[in-house]
Length: 336
Image (tube, rainbow, N blue to C red; front, side, top):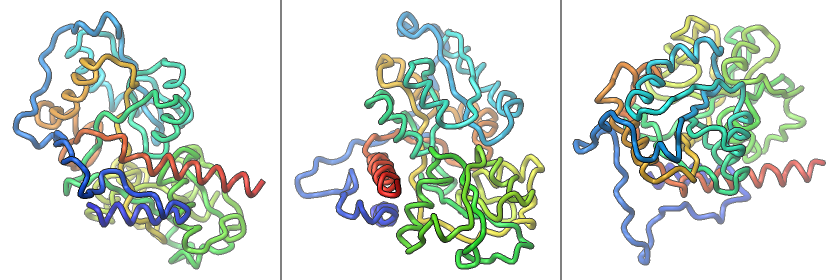
């Protein structure tokens, strides 16, 4: 893991002096064990109304974009119903068109749970002054908690690599997306790419799925989105936006070509409000950790790809993204 973390750190050269949280030193205390879905002693919480329901009379879950609202609600209905049945409080799923909507909802304390990308989590943490915290992080099929940003062009465009993108248009997925905006920008700057001059134009497509559709419809020459980088590329890898679009029949990987891939990116967490009662957060944590074994059908439905489940999240794993957002803001001020 340390080598991978150093790779991610190199994405932002201005942060080269920032040490990774959790890096061992002689003075450090041993890190606490992070519970995982694979642990034998992780048990799904028993059904029944909780004492914390007096303080948290309902649970609102933001469902992020990437697919149309109808598909999102249908895909998460079993998950919503299971959580409501387990904790005895009303549970609502609320589609959001972009990360900004989820961040604003957290700031207004209108929601309790959302699955956020690493950059969106950093934005929510900054916007709420530390009012959110990582609950659990999805694990990939190999047990890792990393994925990659990929730049995707049409297969027949003639573009085969990053050099071929010079003078062509590029779509970002979302301003609060790690793979669809922040990490590619930081990585490309490190490679010497002047983003404002290298591409003929850039713009926001309104989400990951929309970005790929914009490329297929020739509105942009390429886009940035996310993929696990594991498994069969012809199927969109094991997990990610490409995989989801292949599974829904929206994309044939023969029609696109990956022309650039980032270093590994720490997977974003399932996020909760920090002011929830500790007993509530513990119940929710066990709900997710035990979900793959207790209710594998629901786990597969909401994750749409092979994985080993979840592990407990840690704030220090996202400090780098907070620093990167601050660097991006500073770069924007310099441009202005």
